[in-house]
Image 1 (cartoon, rainbow, N blue to C red):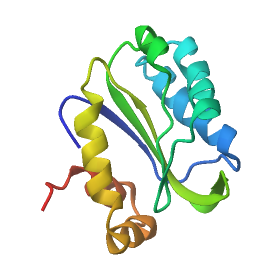
Image 2: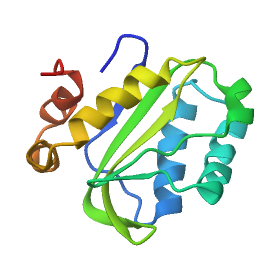
Image 3: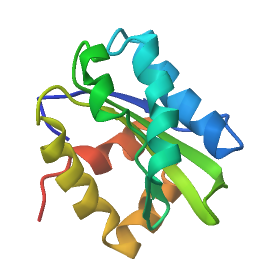
Length: 143
């Protein structure tokens, strides 16, 4: 998506609930050394204050502003779910856990908005059979 971020992709996530999906994305960031455990916990605090459901099968869980000090490096944890997860009454098939240092996450958020604004693109992304095919959607230059 952008060279400012490390990206970690999972083609078939295991979570079945919103909280499990937040945990799965947070643990992927934690496992790769991009955040500290406190950041993952703050992702739940953020969700309690405002839903990170964005529409068109996408949720972008992230930590609170106060938890930015627990980010070691900017990264995206991009996980697809074959079966939709109910997220505040809406279906979510792609969860993007985000940890951004400074304002570097704004570019990534803009690109995600472009990708998920087109229903046809989302349909193709959800049908991707291979990890490389799925990841390619996030690496294509904006039209």
